[in-house]
Length: 354
Ligand code: COI
Image (tube, rainbow, N blue to C red):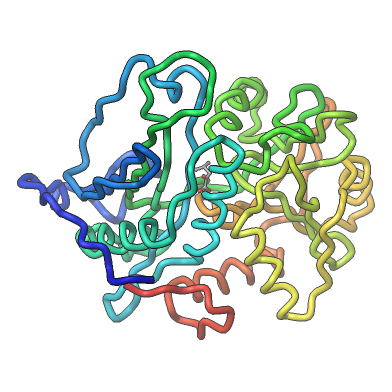
């Protein structure tokens, strides 16, 4: 890497920092003072800058609005005991953003622009990183088409932006999930493994129907037979069956979750058996009935570890063992929190510091 990019900064004259109650921050509603932008035009990324957070202009003909030409990431920063800031596994988010970019005909974002933009923004807005229990700074990098053309073709101009927001828990209590056996989130050959808006918009209607029936979220199943569980849309699904950590194997249809990967690495480090494989719905239901499924949880950046208290399938609800007694998921949540906050030695090399 060459020298740090010299990113021009226009500071806000009206900081909103003093108006925020950091002990009570809902997810995704309050944004930090500044945002980072880079523009892609004539085959190169340029015009890097940090400006006050505000609404942006976009052409009414932008393919972003018409065809969903957008990709995004989610990562978190934490306030360390010594006042410094820990960013968790940003290298994985950088890699995954470019995997999504490939699939959506978006040019690769150079490593230096991603990291220098991120670091400059966090240095400037470091006062926005909360330190109350269970809070963090959620970081949302995203890229979208900035073309002015409604024909169907790969775009030629883009914006890469980073915005941040102090957040508390995404799910404030254990969730009830329904195994979806009609609607489909992703199919083989599709874009389910990417973080593109195209995967999230159409998932809301089936989720809304499930919410009307009292569930919080769905567990999606495969698009061919609805035979295998996949992911939850907001998080990957992880189970403890017969004392082993079991999670659906990755493929075209499942996001390569960074929390999922972290949980698996920690489990292996603790000597636990980990199985990444196809997981049949039937196996989930049978193992609940036989008392062999002792824990179920979602793993995601926003959700962290979201305990699943109940699984619904074909009109029947299956109550899972009490959350308090779940040895692995409670312990892994504590371990992840300890690593992110710098309370536990960073033996996996997951933390970068500001
Ligand atoms: C994340 O976990 O970062 C996501 O992008 C999921 C979204 C539901 C907030």
